Structure formats: structure tokens, C-alpha cells
Image (cartoon, rainbow, N blue to C red; front, side, top):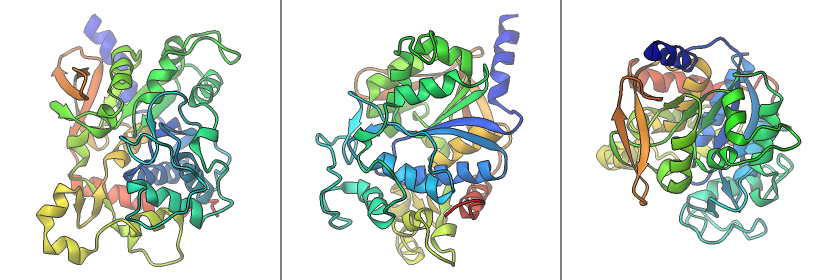
Length: 360
């Protein structure tokens, strides 16, 4: 009976009817598959498959929230709730930075001190008036955004899709009752959240950027989350490539196209040394599409494109290492290849390339 109950509780994580209510949680820090993921989510919302409830950053003291707002504005949803963590978590231009990125500092050039975050500061410079928060520290507390949004939704209706650090999910679990709900964070999640889809961890033992760089938050979130978690991990996304289609697409510029066109190496560069570029997570199709796979699962369910196995991901030690333990009645699902990865990449590209239904 216990196995039957667990199977039924995990069933919504595999397939569900649209539109899916989604909270999108991204680091928007150095990599740019986050941009592709948010573009996919907006395209799915335009098609009536999803309802975007909020778009929050899991990093602070940088241009992450403003960059999210630029993309939201491009798709005609510039008023979506946004937020960022307070007090803990990754600060600045990269995961090991010690200082925030001052929004008034000169942009400089692509090889300057901003590291990979340059692309997001450049979005703010190129699209003035499309955002409110040049500094993520000025945005609302992600805790308040989560609690306000979740409290207003029907029970068991929200899918959280995280493509960055797990800081906000840990902080949410630790919240107390407030004006939005008398429930503490864990109870509020248990009542309102259907499923959490996480781009995190590395199979079966190793370190993955999203889960390792704020490893303590990852440990607390993974150990205490009360609803099913579906993982699309490093291994799943490393050889799913997307983004070149929009980078080379004819027509006027837009913020999504700008990011991909400005950061994907040319076809000629790839041909010269494909093994080198593969080690850097690039292929002829573009960038490794870790985050985009999470959005596909969050909106369309896991089984449409992927096989799943059951077990538990957990953090071990204090250096960001994770491990997967297969178990018949485990609380977590891990996706593996079903539809050929090249086809998944084409599905992602088609979504990224769609023109906004009501955008700028």
C-alpha cells in the first residue's frame, strides 16, 4: 500500500493538464541557458500551456533581476513579480565573487572584471527602460514573492522550476507564518506545490554548479522538501544542444537573440576543435541546454521526452558533492534519455525562436 500511495503522489510529476502554474527560479549569473529556459517558458505561456506566476533570481548584488525583467518585457510580461535572496547566497558577478556588481560601474568589455556576468549587464545597457531593478539587491525579497504567490494559488497547483542555486528554496522552507499565510514555509509548500523540477546535481556522484556553489542551502532544501522533486541533472543536459538557431535567425535583434548570438562560438570555430568545445559545453547546435530541459519537464511533464528512475539525490560532505541513491520508493525522480537528445534540442530551439505573441 505504501508503494501505491507513493506512486500516486508522484504521478503529477510525470504528466499533467495545461496550463501549468509555474514559478521560475534562476541564477541568471554567468551561463546563458537560463535565457533559453525563460524564453521557452514564455513561448509555452503564449501557447496557453503555462501560466507564469513569478520569475525570481537566486543570486544578489548583480544584474540578474534586471536581466530577467528585460526578457519578461520582450514577451510582454514586464509586470511579473520578481525577487532575489537577502542575506545569504551567491553575491556578485560569479559564484565565488566576494563583492557585488555596482550598477553604476562602467560596462567595460566582454573580457573585463564581470566574468560571464557581462552579458547580463550588457542587456541592461542595451535595453534601458525595460527593467526596474538594475541591482538585484533593490528587488523584493524572494521569500515574500514566494509566500504571496503560493498563498494565493489553489492547493497542489504550483510547479516550481529552478535552474540556479537552491538558495531561495532553502530560505522558503525556513520562513514563518506572515500576512499571506499562517503556515510556515514547509507547510505552505506542502499545501500549494505540486512538484519541484530542479536542474541540479550530477549522476551518480560528483559536483554540479547549481547544487555545489551554495551547498548548505542545497542540503537543507533537498533533505526537507515535502513534495516530489524531478531532477534533470548535469548528465542529462550536457549533450542536448540549443540556441544556434536563434543566434543565426534573420530579422531584427531582441534580447534573447542578442545573448545567444553574442556567446555561441561560430560553426567554423567548432569545426576546428569539436572536442575542445564539447568540453566547454558547446556543440554545433549551440550551448548545452541544461535549463531548457527543466522547463520542458515543468510544463509538459517528464514522460513526454524522458524516462525516469526513482531514488534520492542528497548532498554529502561540505564541498558541494552530491550522490544519487536508487531506491524503489525514493522521493525523487531523475530523468534519462527517451526521445533522442538531438530531437529534444530541436524542440527547445523551436520554442526559443517563436516570436512573442504580445511582446515588445
